[in-house]
Length: 447
Image (cartoon, rainbow, N blue to C red):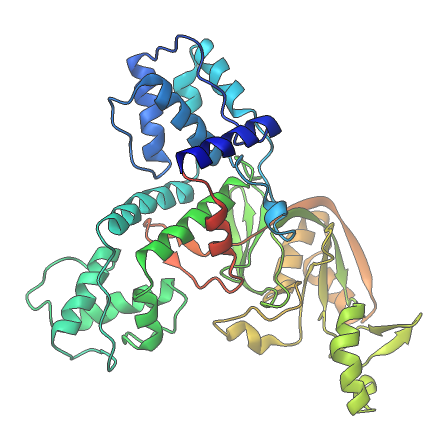
């Protein structure tokens, strides 16, 4: 194993890859503050702190490897999946570290390795906790059987309470810990809510499956989410639009605060919505839908072949040999479309299918992102240039297609979170419908 690792390091060094760690500076001697800064970097990154007696040269090498991970330099996301189009800018980690040491700035350099946002810090703390849970054998499985609900008594209720205590959802102790009282029902409902489960306060099959997910799986999930956060800019624009395809939600930020949150219908398992950064540049009112060839070939034309009146009933026409759905009450893009620059041909839009937004599982589209409140979002984006409000409503009422260029393009980040820290630091674990977490975690190197 050591020989295999050494050969891998040689290959990386010859290739000049991000994983090629440079030798420590000659006659390396770290001062006590520098050692403290480097050791604490492991804790901030959510990894166990190495023993203080570790030799300086070995500590240097370990921190350089950690730095490459924390700076998002160990993987090229697009090589793993072409839909992962976000990546951290390249950095020369070994050179940076040596220069910082030579200039007496090693403490500051080590302190700035990890992303500085609180969400990343919460994930790092959770990673430390999960690592310890895994090291000690994982958490006990809750027994399968009949559902547990308020009023039940017994060892199963006690096991549930202990697990919720470990998750931070319920206080320890209590006069009757094996009694399923209102406090336990409230705690379980809270757990279900933040885990994207049906909220009924009952330990049924779906909630039991969620609880019995192994700690090793959750650790890999946290690792994958931490890595995806490293792909983002260290300083996000204070005014921006974010779409989270994991949680199927969106948020418009102004001054770093959310001013409008909404549900989203992202791509299905067959047609995932990519991870990428772009900007909204145009809002289209009463947009036509130029049907992509694949959707026409695989879905619409077969329906038309079985039902000759299908195209006419749904407003489809042929223009230049392609199908188009002009604006109207049945138009797939609804009343508003948000155009953006994207190599994937995806965008945000309205939809006449409003019922789907009430579903818990909303990964249903062909890759574009359907917006729950498109007119509210359009109004917020158009108001600064005097095109929102009543004027926008008048423009929509005409039924004519109108393209309005945004005088200030809106930064857009399409992300994918499945381990989401709350304001209290607790993590909400969501099902990863695309299966991206396991693939990414498996590709990440160790320290």
